[in-house]
Image (cartoon, rainbow, N blue to C red; front, top):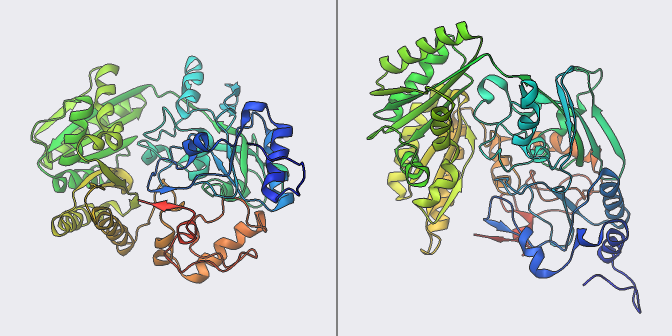
Length: 495
């Protein structure tokens, strides 16, 4: 029930809820406990927090009103898009506002002459390409969840996708943002021009995981559809041969639009889920796609086939049409969800290594799996070394979740050991806070936090995310390094 002003002084949270009720439509403020549970986690279900209130604004002015109310009363808030994130980045605050942008779904402009579009943050990624398609254009970033994830969430996480090898991440396709800062000020970062003078505040905002403000409008870059596209599927005896083929392709001067790899366990899951028809007996498959001018694609495609054959591919299939291309990609893009066919629970990990280290790291992961008895299915963007190991477990078995978490952490340690990163595109969120201290020094973390403090000195915007200890911005001393603050305080559940 909404708070009442009869006979008592409103708490800060109640005052914010009252303000939300005043400025938002009646159905846009959720306080019912059962409905609130719908928003207790994002795509990473390991952490759960029931928010105090959920609001669904429909425009930037309403977002401003909500954020101003939070700033005036010192109430924390978290922005959320489609809730498909895999790092707990949109994990709510138990005593705060969850600001959901899913109703802000308008494509405001398709500007073909300037090769750009203007969209609201709740617009689904794939819908941008659908809107631009009649003009011969598309939006290049394509996370595997592009049918359901929102552009605002892509901005928050600097999402990648299968084609980021050639086309880069979200940050390479954003020209400008309109955003509400944590004090309620509406600002514009970047703009229609490709490059602007001064500090790159736009670049700082993209990938900040919702800790610097709430995006309300996005200007994206559109690309012209390529003249030709060719896709192949190659089956290999093991990931060693497939990894060697990847290195040979890149070393040979070919830059495919995408090179994706799946191992035998991931292939098994995809076959059960979508019957994608990958080569029988394959220990690994590569999905390689090239696009561009027809003559260039024809030549480089022949080179890719040659490298695959020379490095042990026992079967190579070339998509003859769009239907065959879609089926090849269906197996890869369904992989995360498909693993649910072979395991009741799993952790979706996300780390980066140099692609030359693929054989060694995959071998180490295999040994980790054998020694621990924890199965690991490997799916990854092989071209840029972005691993997505899926660590399988059964939460009904005592200790299984803890063993899976240990293996998951050991994989991230492998990435750091080989000069890589603890995340390539899923973000740090709540899940990887405990690993930040392994990759960065205290001075590194303090420097990064100073940027955050410049935007959010009161530490109200998505608190408890990314940084392991809240040493700056006037925050109270946090829990020991490696523990998530909300779990430590009993406000969140893990596993």
